[in-house]
Image (tube, rainbow, N blue to C red; front, side):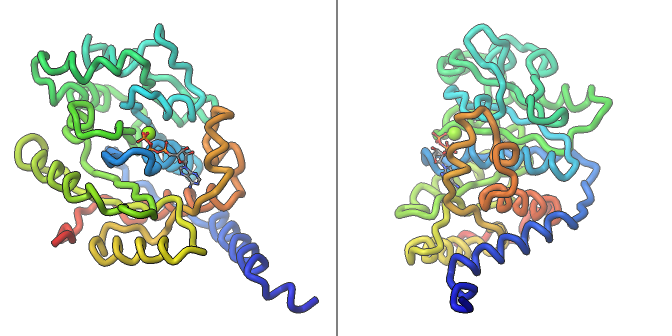
Length: 300
Ligand code: ATP
Ligand code: MG
């Protein structure tokens, strides 16, 4: 019987229990500022949306007030937050193209009163092209967000922008509106492929549109510790970006992938699961690390 206590599964469960307890007693102090983070990676399916909505819900669970801006025509973040986003719903499209105030399109997630969302609708699919002929086409989200933040009586602690998998005008609007770039990286083959292009875009935006923009956070997602590949990818990313990579990584977990089909984040769907615990730990780490730019951007 004693052998049972020493199996990998038993160790994993004991570890999870200890981490759950640690989270129960953790107290965080919010900065008193609004941190605007854009969750970006032009690679598709790396966990941008999953990360944006679950980090948002996890931040809310420790007392933050959070707005998620769904900037992807797929509308996956709106779905995961239980927000209606059929074609007739006022959305981020109306903000970007028709200059609606953000307050007119913000909805509250059924999950928590402090979890807010600007939905995306299918109309956004045309915005990338429609924006080309607009005045101040790169700054439209920033203008709307700045006006909204200045008008608020109750401060938002975080704004998380979920980007589409491209480096087009929608993502550029997100880069222009944000202070911090948050990059999820999937622990798979070719994880680093395309990263230099992304960092090149961030540098270009910093030079021309938004001098304060910096990569503050890199999160390893869909990590499977049983494979050598995942460990190798993690080591490689950490070697390149020692300052930005978060200590917490997100394991591959069925509960995480199931949650959106119930219109929920994993925090609401199964808050004690390994995926939810990891996202809650990541949220605490993001608050504790603050938004200070890394002294050196780490990529050589
Ligand atoms: P896109 O580029 O299309 O916007 P994305 O980068 O936003 O994609 P997600 O939609 O978040 O990526 O995730 C891609 C797929 O991987 C989804 O089916 C999601 O449920 C699944 N997934 C994400 N994170 C995890 C995880 N930790 N464990 C298991 N499945 C996951
Ligand atoms: Mg997505």
